[in-house]
Amino acid sequence: YKDIESWLRCCTDLRNICAHYGRLYYRIFSAIPAGMKEVDENAERRLFAAILVVKKLYPDKAKRIVELLDELSALEKEGETDIDRMSGIFGHIMEEILAYRQDEWERSLRRIGFYLGKFIYLLDAYDDVEEDVKNKDYNPFAKKYTMEGFEGEVRQILMMMMAETCREFEKLPIIKYGDILRNILYSGVWCRFEEVSKKRRGEREKEHVGSI
Image (cartoon, rainbow, N blue to C red; front, side, top):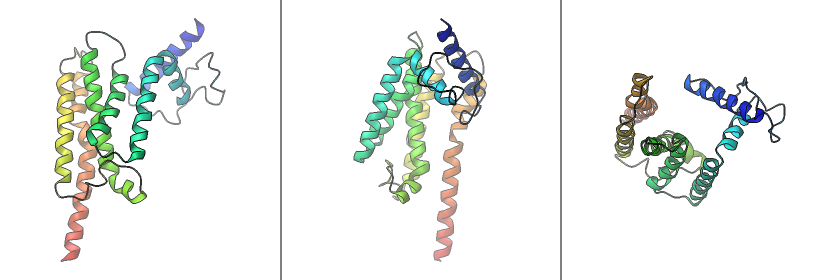
């Protein structure tokens, strides 16, 4: 009983930090998980311990997520270029995270997680593509990013993903922080895309002027 109580305190601690947009890395957590043989005293107040607690409490989800991560890693090593397939795997990871219990809202939460996960994966690939190509790392956009219309195509795909995410979000009985969540989903998620897009447009304009 004492072990479970301490684990739940760790989850509450982790939840509160995330809910208030706190930093997780290099943070000293207030709760210590009891009965964790995998965690030594140097790590018992760190993020690693909190993640192990979540794994202990949700073993089925943890197993499924590991399976999906292994599948994603294998396909990346093979150089898979099907962006729908690759982003879909990450979408399934996110749906496992969001659908934390079986109830009447599970379907909507899974769909939100799925489409939001696809959005995150594709936005990250769009953001990193130049650096990944330079370093010879995997990126599903590696063969496309220099093609004409690439940016517009990515924007269109991302808009479709967020449209589905927002459609399912509006079905949920959100009582608290509804306006904040809508601001994030309808506006905030685009900040990084617009920042990268603006930077690349500026670089292209400089190259064009320099070639005249």
